[in-house]
Amino acid sequence: MFVVLFLVICIIVALIWITAKMDSSIETAFTPKGQLTPVEGGIIHWQKQGSGPPLVLIHGLLGNSNNFSELAKTLANHYTVYAIDRPGSGFSSRYKGTSASFEAQSKMILAWMNIEGIKEASIAGHSMGGGIALRMALDAPDKIKSVSLFCPLTTPLKEGAGPLSVLYIPNEFVRKSVAKTIASPLRAKLGKKQVGQIFYPEPVPSSFSTEGGGLLALHSRSFYEGSRDTVSAQRSLYKQQPRYNEIRCPVGVLYGERDTILKPSEHISALTDAIETVTHEIIPSAGHMIPVTQVEACASFLLSVDAKI
Image (cartoon, rainbow, N blue to C red; front, side, top):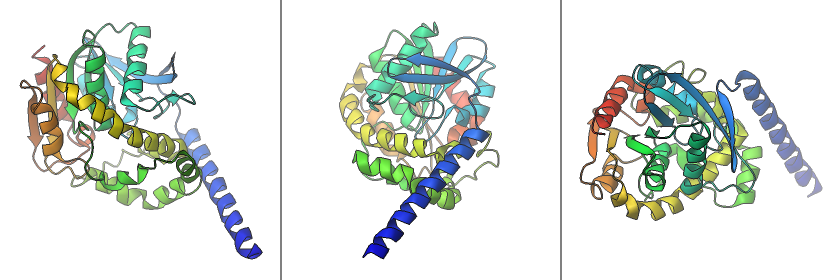
């Protein structure tokens, strides 16, 4: 019995050490490219380029502002583009005790806008970032000019979100333990397959792991905060979906036809059933990561939504 216990302890210690080494390697490889703005509840990291009316880009689960690197470049021809790391993601932080709810994330992003003097802006959100963009339109209708959504999470999930389902860990002790031990080593081993599933049926760009910020998702904090996001999302969506009919700014939804992470029909109808004026389109044969794989289509769609302001 003692030998078994000793072996278990050794394995746990080894996993903690491996995770710490991986975290250190990722932190060495990636440094903040933008600015850091303290707000109540944490710090927002953001990148800015271009000129014109303000546009804020909000990434999805386990993502970061680098996911929008190519889309931001394209849109910078028309806008002052602010690509942010959501609270708890990338180089943005959530202080201990800060909620991961959509309400709290909306409040923090809106506070960042106030501090940086962004009086009003168009918002674009991908996946979970789309749900938070909608929450911002409800919380600050005077500041949000339009909402463009790319494969958005708009309604509580009825089933898992593909390989991202492993993030649903409601127990805090279990979540923290998994993040500090097995999460990063397992995801490093299975990462290529899982990323392929998220991008399916489109290929993963060779530059995604570095320029697109993909490797940042392997950090233990990314798993931990991503799990908090996942658990909070269900409660947040149950609260906000009944209020979608209150949104008055132009709203557009663009989905990949073959998205296997979120069901296009469910998440589009959650909005079209509530808002008669919603613009919605499907990109044939595209998957979930259209801000990365379908840059021109996303940019054109956003411009068409903004034309209705």
